[in-house]
Length: 110
Image 1 (cartoon, rainbow, N blue to C red):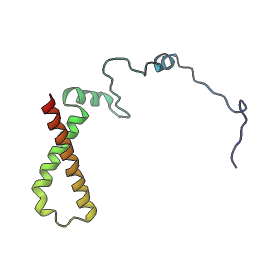
Image 2 (cartoon, rainbow, N blue to C red; image 1 turned 90 degrees about the vertical axis):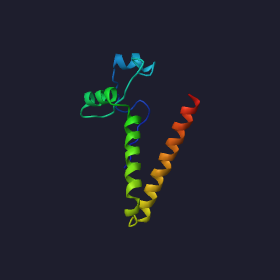
Image 3 (cartoon, one colour; image 1 turned 90 degrees about the horizontal axis):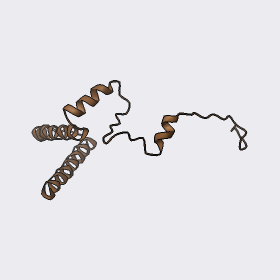
Image 4 (cartoon, helix red, strand yellow; image 1 turned 180 degrees about the vertical axis):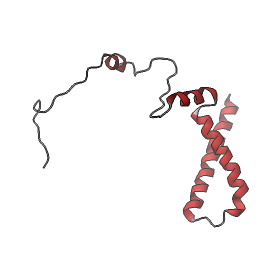
């Protein structure tokens, strides 16, 4: 059975956190560059990788390029794929082509 409560008749709790209240008005941004790593068991490692190796975009870009090479080299051996698997590869190729086009457009405008 659902629980019904009239206004001001239920449990009342309020967290008072002065830091949150003070910075909530400015969007919780404390510096020029802020990285929200989300939930990570080792945020220090993620931050170091981002600083020394590359951004998430760069990491994903390199993975995409490597997968494109593998797919192109294995194409003759991929004939036994199901329709869904073939569609997944086609969608990946389309995505990579769109990314390549955006990069090319950006280079031309720079």
